[in-house]
Length: 168
Image (cartoon, rainbow, N blue to C red; front, side, top):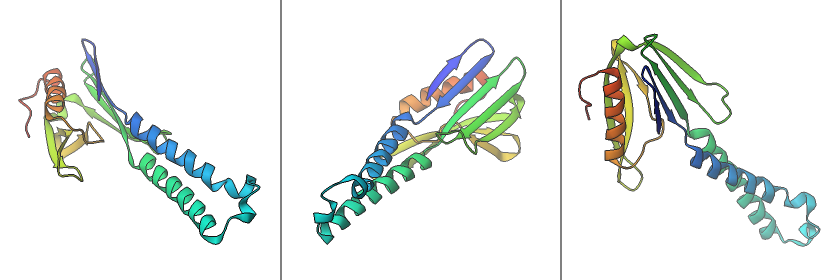
């Protein structure tokens, strides 16, 4: 997550660019492998199992890459003290079907660090902004390792909004 701050404005950008690029590499490799039957002069000489393996590998790469790219979300949160407005955007790589939320900064109640575990059982952390009426916004769409870094970002947001200390 990157934080940009001026006197009256704080922008939090959480873009999973590495995940998107890795997923797109798998989409590209899957599409390439699936195109082999159309351009390979040797395709007719491949046996049944070789053809099945090529198609399975290509389909696996294409499906896995697509799943990875479409699952990873990016968030952008703009907090504007001058106008007393917050804007929150959640999107996928191509900015289609983005979810937007606008809220008065006075509605901000707390910044929370949410702890969970990854598939290996290691701790991961996300930031959540609580608003009035028990509404919340995920400031980080993708969980991150490293509690100290997430805590520093949470404190940065908390200080900007003049909120009480961050909860866990």
